[in-house]
Image (cartoon, rainbow, N blue to C red; front, side, top):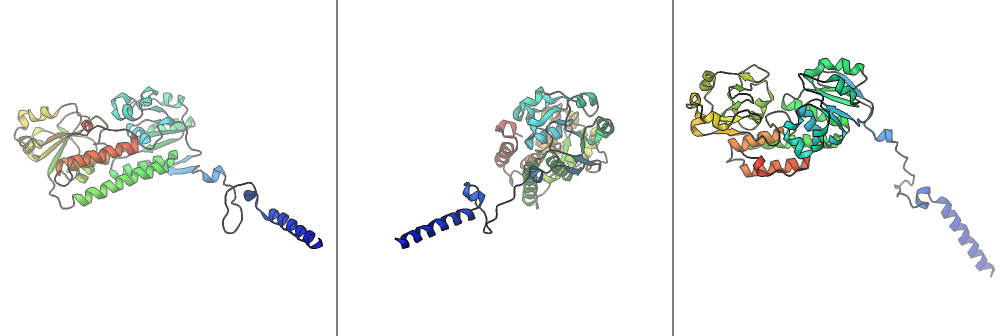
Length: 357
């Protein structure tokens, strides 16, 4: 009997001893612990946050953003589209004027069309912007003179200037850091890097045709080497006949100059106020190689202006490659790639009719 009591007492002592050694997490059914047996220290929300963050904008200003912005104003169509691609459209409180001329807004974020507008780069509505009480205002570099007044009102302003491929990628990274959308920004940057690598590899030994990019307002305006459009053409496997121009905006040229260049291909900018037929039927251009061969193509206009540094700009380079070098990059392959881009970054399904040539 004594032996049985002793055994029972020993068992009870061991039970209570083991219970006392159990960690709080284990005894309450919490998370498993590592081999060391010590519970993980709780992580504060401040440790998890990327804010406050200090960034360098396109004007070389140091801009400190204290907390993740909840209300955004974008005064530039390029950054508005970029914010949609980064999944930040629900934070927008105001955008640039003429939003109804941007098809991608209607397709991917129709609610933006109902937002107040803050004017244009030529006529920015400073008071209207301030009235929206944004946590962050994103503006093009050309509006830098508006910054002091906005800062005097206590607003945080970020300036951008995506005028070439490198600056486009820098702007994507900058907005990702500024809005807490780093993961989405990295995905878009990865797409750009992969597209650039694909086109460079695919077209590395190709014979590059001479190409004239006809501007928006007139087909007697074009883009020189200092404009983003030049890198778009080169990446797509073309040789820009206007690369020698020093203008940093669309340059007006004469019929004589265009005839002297005599491009093999003419590409028409997405926002053109004229048609392909206008070029083909202009008697003063009848001797152009591009006109005689019928190699005049209008960039699609039903989504975005791919000839500008929007997030889908490298889709534009893919389009050019498929138009100029369909033997190396089939046009139906381009259409498939473009559809996937818009599914991934804008969550929309795009029909082939919007991806034509």
